[in-house]
Structure formats: structure tokens, C-alpha cells
Length: 394
Image 1 (cartoon, rainbow, N blue to C red):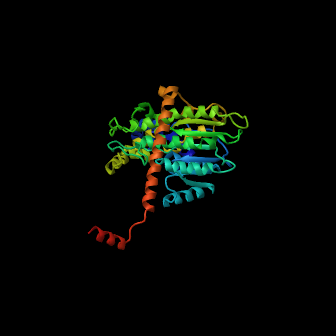
Image 2 (cartoon, rainbow, N blue to C red):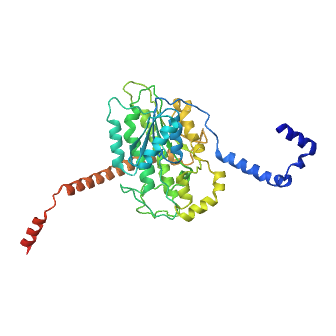
Image 3 (cartoon, rainbow, N blue to C red):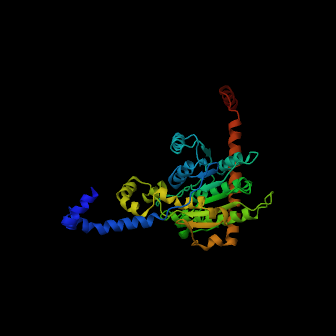
């Protein structure tokens, strides 16, 4: 059939193609759209890795890039631990069942670890560490994040933090800090990686260590990327601190450090997070988003393409053998745009502030729980006692 068609074109000329003039008119635009799409979708990871027997923990593994990574590593045979807010959620149960069925991997579990609650994080970490010998943990991937749309007022976490700071940074920092013993206790021959998601918004961040919760400043309702970027910038700064702690750790077996931390910028990706931000979290905004979807399709990656740099860092032999505390974008190492990420003095201030904030929040929450228990344990007076007291009062 193709040969007959080519013969027809050879005999009658290219002008014999139906609607030839219209095709010729629109062809440059089609080719331009294809070129734009190919440019913005970015490179693809070329590394492969057998993950059978590996234990991989993911925050944000039920949506967006995190869900794409979860599908990928599950199909590679990894034992997957999803850290979620509520393990009793019916949708989550179906999600895990579907993931097990599609990947043919039964080793997929969920653990309760609400990043907006320091108490929830500590409960999970305590249960994970309370095991002899130490549980295996090959990789910790931090994808969970909150990104409030413009025009939305400031929200506060359960522990009293501005939500971007409390979830994107403090929650992940507490999780990494508490799980550090589990990471450091892995055998020296084991390749252990910590992968943290960042975003280009860190370049526009307004990080003020004197007012991280916007108690003195006005919360930027019309520019929430400043607060979001500050949380991501802080997470990037803490990566250097964590890597130095791992490098200085003296292993009982005298082996070399085998824990490496990495930062990944996936680029602009069409995820529920970006959709909510772009649509302003409104029905009318969602309608406009859908009308402009051809534009987003061209210039934004889908989740499968967005995870490619994560896979590069998770699979690449160089990341398993070289140094840690590196920043990756488009499947290759890149330079950071903010000097704060390499500022040792500022990082020390951030660590001191973070530990102070966490300590104060945990003490306050513990006192509140103690008061609640006291109130619940206090016996309520019976109706007869209430009537007797009223008579006495009379």
C-alpha cells in the first residue's frame, strides 16, 4: 500500500495530495508545536536498576510525581512504604490494591505519618526505629508538598507553623532527622540515598529566619510562591547539613559513609498541585485551566516525564558511588542559583532555629494532649449530685 501511494505521488506530483495547500499552510505551525513539546518535555533517564529486595520510602507517593515514582519502583520489585496522612482512607486502600495489581508486587504498604504534625512524625519514626536488628531502608524520597494558590489566606499547621514552612520544610526535616539513625545503621556495602524534591521557585524565595511564620511580615497572599520557595530553599540548605552529618559519622565497623543526599528539580510538571495553583483553587479557574490545556500540554511535562530526573538520581551508579549534596535538573548535575544553599553560617542558624521551633512546638502539643487527657479522666457529676449541689447553693 505505501509503495502504491508513493508511485501515485511520483506520477501525479506532490500537488495531487488532497488539501495540499492547507497542509502546507499549517505544517510550519505543527512542526513548531512538536519542537516546543520536545524541548519542554526534557531528557529521559537512561539508567536501569534492579530494585528487588530494596526498601524505598516515599512521601507524597499517592499523587503527581510521587505516584509516578511509586508505580515505577513497584514495577521494579522494590518494597514500597508510602507515608500518608491517614491509613484508614478508603481511597488509599483502593490505590494500594490497584498498585499491587498493576505492578505484580505485593510488597506495597502505607504508614501513617502526617507531615503537618510533629507528633505523628515522631510516632512513625519511633515505631520504625524500634526494631532489632535495624530495619532495611535503601532510599527515602521526599516528594510531598503544599502549594497554596494566590488570593488564599495564610493557613497554620497543627503545630502552629505557616503551612508551607511547616509541611514542606519542618515536617521533612523532622522526618529526616529522626530517621537518620536508621539510615546510618545500614551495612557499609549498601547504597543508601535520600532524594529531596525542590522547585525553581526557590530562586524567588524570601527567606527571613527572624520571621518564618509571618508574625511580623504580611503573608504574601498574591505571591504565595515566595513562602513556598522559602520552604524549598530551607530544605535545600538542610541537605548540606545532613550530608555533613552523615560524612562525619563514625561507623562501628569503621566503614565509609554510604548515605548520600540529593536535590532534584523536576521542572514544570502538570500535577494536581500545579493545577490547583494555576486554577486558583476555584471552579472558574479550573474552567480557564481546561480551556488553556493545550498550552499547558505543550510547555509542562506530565508526571512520567517529571520523574525522569528523580529516576536518574535513584538509578545512576555515579550517585551511588560519588559524593552527596548535589543538585540535579534535566537528568544532569547543575549549579544552584542561591548562595544561601552553600552558606555554612546561615545553615547553622537555620538548624538552630529549626530545632528550637520543633522543640517548642512538641512541648506545647504534649502539654495540650496532657490537659486533654486530664479533662477526659475527670469524672462528671451525676444528676443527683448536681441537684444536691443546687439545693446547697440555695
